[in-house]
Image: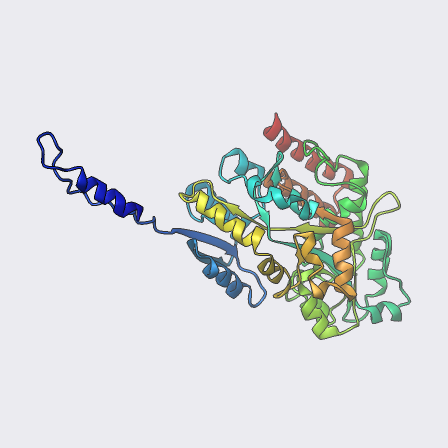
Length: 417
């Protein structure tokens, strides 16, 4: 009616008298809305069946943009680093933020999305996406690793579940019989999996609490790393397994009585071993240390080079803030992960009893972030090399650890001056 009235008034004003404007030939119409944005979303290749179909289903359900999911087998982390340096694709991707990405303006801060529900996220998981007070990724789910052990084998050997690192070394030796090794922590002898847990067992960490100092510049770090040498020399570790630590086959097939592996393997282990297994956190070094489990969490992030940052933020908010049912499904239906948001853990029925409930408790009470955004690749390489030399070659723990400390300090100086 308003439009019609305006049209009539316009016609009536043209009387044909001198000085009247000529009739208008313009046609006024509501402009067409812009087409929805096209967003490219990347995931690494999850090993659990059903995840790929699920994330494609989530993307297809979003109506405000066309979201195309790309699945990325292989070295996903390196692919993301290259993409952020050179490309506007992907718009949305999963990763754990690195301080260099922030310093180089490659990723978008997402505090405006997460602030209303920030207190609902596990602190260690949120720390994985935070650099200098700003959040760059919305955590999707929490992954952790625990020590699985065969209850029947420990009972037959007259052993209690190990509560200290020395007790773990002793148990691994006593459980080694015939074709069964006591412990499997990876084909590299635990260098890749146990560096963090060994630090935490001594009450130390990769970095200091301010993230500006080396957290393992302490004699106890050398002591802890020396324990890995003991494990590698007492003939109790399974080495050369057909699959590495992230797969449960060695434990399920009876090649090892204990295995350090991911919580994501819980369904396969339950199916194979029924009630004949339990889980533990990594034990403490001594009474001055602490038990621990590592946590890692990819978060949904946005490429700062994307031409559709606004549309990408809308999508990330919709999927990883608003769609709590999908978030719970993503974390618990296809493998065994802990929801990143505390409020969703109560709805995770598969985390309520047995070893799964124990693992969820470990995450809540004893979780530590592996490295973190300020822990650089250069520092990590130096520490891994040092631990490998100590564990595999018998290098002096004190001098070798100091080399890694110096490398970490050099990286921190590069970052902070």
